[in-house]
Image 1 (cartoon, rainbow, N blue to C red):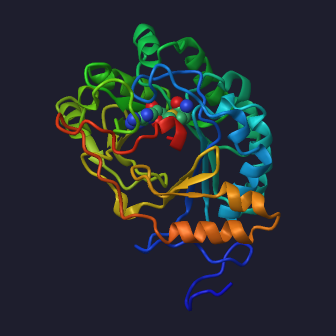
Image 2: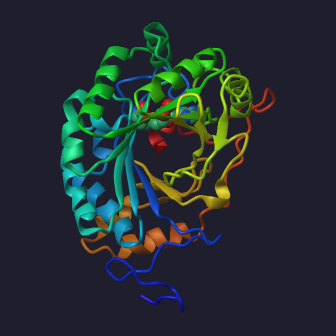
Length: 345
Ligand code: SAM
């Protein structure tokens, strides 16, 4: 392999992945399953058809794929889904990937979860070297929770949060800001999270996949949420970053941190360091664009990683500048047809 002059050699001697806009790819998000035990109404349609299991990469293949990115400079690896903790034997993958933490090649191994399975898995995740996790929770009201998730039980999630904290995991709560559904609850959700020593990040709903309702009826701009919060709280912008797209403020009255993930009102594509792989080995260079690369074929074509690495390089060389999400009454179609549960949130 030829390496451009001035390029730093890393990992096992391979060059880092730099896209056409000079952005280094240091963060990989891997959706290990498209299945979930919830059906959040803004994420999935009520009757989803899921991928046949034989199309999925095996855990060994997922390991190989993740490891190929780690040798190319990925420092942060997030397993997501669907719900990552409903994938059978998922701990085998966590345990195996932990070797990259031990070697120092990887700085962070983490996951995004709905929390429903954490009473079972929190301690094992901590034992694998997972330090921080994101738990998605849009409301603390049991009835609303059931309505948003279509069939979720909030008591399991709250028990999961307890288990995660008891295992020493640092928990961040992610909540999608939903017009009419949880907008009045955002201050109390924040006070609850901060009271338990957890950061809260708010997320703008994105137009991903057909979900059977108009996005405009769900969309709550975080610029508005922030303005409302500022009538009651003192928010101070801070430089704190976790390697993702959230921009943080500290809240004087609670002493906690609040993140804003604003793909619509203010995207941060210029600093994007991420790519995503689905459970079938499809690499998406941008959450909001259709262009993708098949990594399963080169992965399966050879036991050595040459073809796989070449496919990854080729894909990164066409990572787009960013996405152009639009939510308004005139724009009826989603930005991309795939749901967040497939690409991995
Ligand atoms: N099941 C896991 C969970 O609940 O966190 C991981 C996958 S889930 C797709 C990841 C995150 O994406 C969740 O926080 C979810 O609320 C969020 N999400 C799903 N669809 C979304 C959309 N259309 N716009 C914004 N966020 C969305």
